[in-house]
Image (tube, rainbow, N blue to C red; front, side):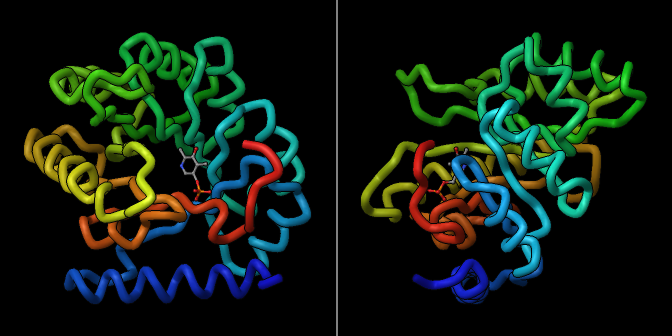
Length: 231
Ligand SMILES: *Cc1c(COP(=O)(O)O)cnc(C)c1O
């Protein structure tokens, strides 16, 4: 079985090649190692191999790992966040990538205030019409971003999306392109907390296409850690 270190090297090589194809510096792309279903020992191994950011889908599952690893890595919440988990999410995660409604922005802002911290957030966008999955509708995106920009303890960092699953990653390309275009529109409104607008898109099966289309963050689980026991 290839080691996490070998896998990670392969991922970075492919990111480099995809960046070259689209004339971007590969240094613009960060890898989030997705650790749902991955035991602590493997997370340790990934840190030693050079992974600096991890993504978790479930607050409860993340807590043990974050306590085990401590602050040697940054932690991104990449799963759907329920209100009743907002307090723990704000305590343990560095970044929440899945803000998709005003109610959640409001509660995160309040929790961040009581923890006396600035919380970095991404807005999750749902680009699949007629689909009940999580994420804000593109028509309502600017309204939500404006709301976040006004809040005193949230910093708007960028956009995140999960396209539908396709066997052929080329089919995901229009979704990636769309998110990048939306990101550009948000940036032009001057509502982003920093100069750069982060674009989180691309997973093990399609991250090369995502990088070609402008991803600045790719979220990679199985291509680094191997198949999951559960998801
Ligand atoms: C599980 C998950 C990933 C990683 O998926 P892989 O296909 O294992 O790379 C990325 N993003 C989100 C939101 C996920 O839930």
